[in-house]
Image 1 (cartoon, one colour):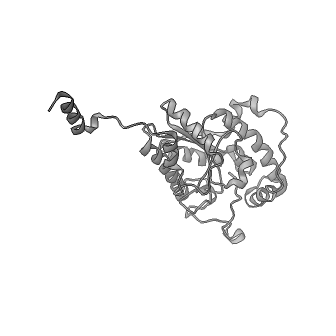
Image 2 (cartoon, helix red, strand yellow):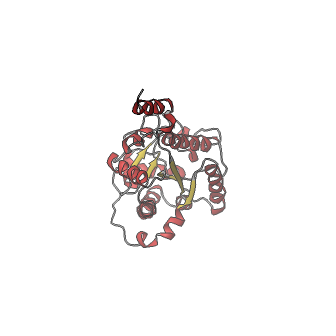
Image 3 (cartoon, helix red, strand yellow):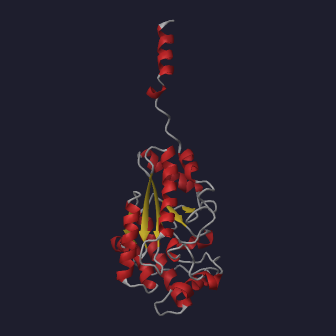
Length: 268
């Protein structure tokens, strides 16, 4: 056996010395863009690939952000844990393919909770519980009000965004169930939409290269940051998109008798 053959033989016998090729952005994308998680196709696959490519070139985790809302409960419960575990499975799928993994940030929508009439004390109690549960899974939590304060320059100004006519009944229906701040459902829906238009600019400024996760479907696209790609996924497991914060401690929908549990119009 000549020297070259002996060298080849040594490499073949010790494959651990050979580094595995780094996965492409497309391969990382495929690790989570599956029907195990998504409820429909992403809003912009190319923008999502761009976000992954930026993380990959920086040898950084793939960044994901999402809104986490407040419902009638003030305490952490089974639906929250199940949803957080499901999100963690998304991150784990990325980590299984990409060594730097994923970074998931929960944006606690305290401003939406205030609009819906929840007290600051109750919202703080719930969001603190979510922060702790998220931290145990390696998630980061931020308050939406802090993002607005920190990016006041992009939030300020008069909005020219008109509420899409098809979205008004959707938001009004949700407000009829969850708003207790003294406004009519339509007025609450319009205020929520105008507020959301300002807030989403703060989010896309704070997370310019991130992927935005939502449990809503694409009909709600106008509510989410215009400059961010949107990943539409289930909330608790495949087939269930109901937001955990609107479910009781047993995972039941308290408005079931009124809406037959099929509504996807609940706001965060």
